[in-house]
Image 1 (tube, rainbow, N blue to C red):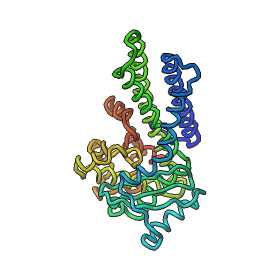
Image 2: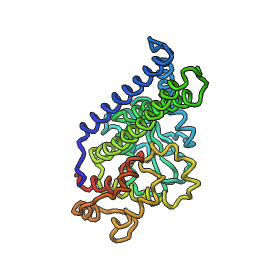
Image 3: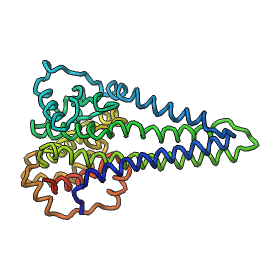
Image 4: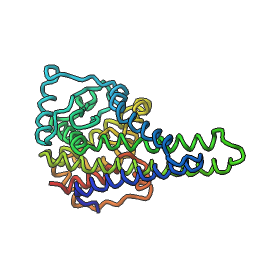
Length: 323
């Protein structure tokens, strides 16, 4: 049965993962350098560092451009600014820039290089769908991402599988000394295995951050049932969108509050939580879930391993245990 996560333990796991991931990429760089006869690792070390730094610097601009974000002033959206400012003060972080995306997929996302560079954005779909309390619960979730700096961490580590994939392609299909072709293929296969493993580790890190962002929103004073209801509505709203519309932003789904590509599956599991079929989850319905035992099937567990977000039913079950 899911238990209430300890935020500090989740953060320790996250940073341990970062150490492991960078250790793995260093091992790959070492293997490539050894194969090429480079003993000081300068070239490939600089390449790995350069790609990571570039991702870190231009990542926020890419996210904002991909989502069609328009930053709004306090005059344009006074209620949104007041809500975010109030939560930012409670979080002890600078008020982030606020943006709105014209996407009709209901969701919100936070990104930025550091706390003072934070941005929190809402799609038009989420502004039209959620109540004020639900929207504030989601905003608290996103601000918690900024507070714990996990947006920057995910941005940094997500480049590691990319480096491994580049090395795998280069050594398996690239031109190398024919006399040592077997060695090149071996390095390429190693890089491909590392790409697969690091991808799974990045996904695991992404799921960890969702748990402590949920806990962070509750810590800011938002009711667990408000966040649970918001997540339920986001899943339902995503499930109503066309697959073509979801496909356009699937590459950015790690930034969203839920895994939009799993919405059709998630809504089948969550529909039973809305006992009175009112379209939202209230405190009594969430309390009812807290008394139930849930067990994921093998398929659900496998789908979760391959997802950027935790299984939604398990996630809401944990919310039901929070106060």
